[in-house]
Length: 119
Image (cartoon, rainbow, N blue to C red):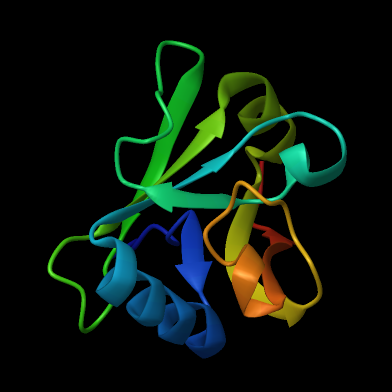
């Protein structure tokens, strides 16, 4: 039987950071836009703080052990058209991300790694 590959996954480091952020900020969400610079990185917000609409696609609801609710992962539709044949893996790397994303004060930033999954 065919089992679909999840569109979005998390590294252990990303899941650990989400647990820490969730303990402080409550339910979380990701949004990745098609903008330049930090706009093309996944941004983490308190759930509902970033307004999504018809120009966004809900790719996944990430279950993170230790969080009460899944973390929705949204992407702008234009960005999704570019990434539609990939599996996205949310990772964490040292460095300063956007001041708008919750991990910015932690001295790390979320980063997307990708793998082609087929046409």
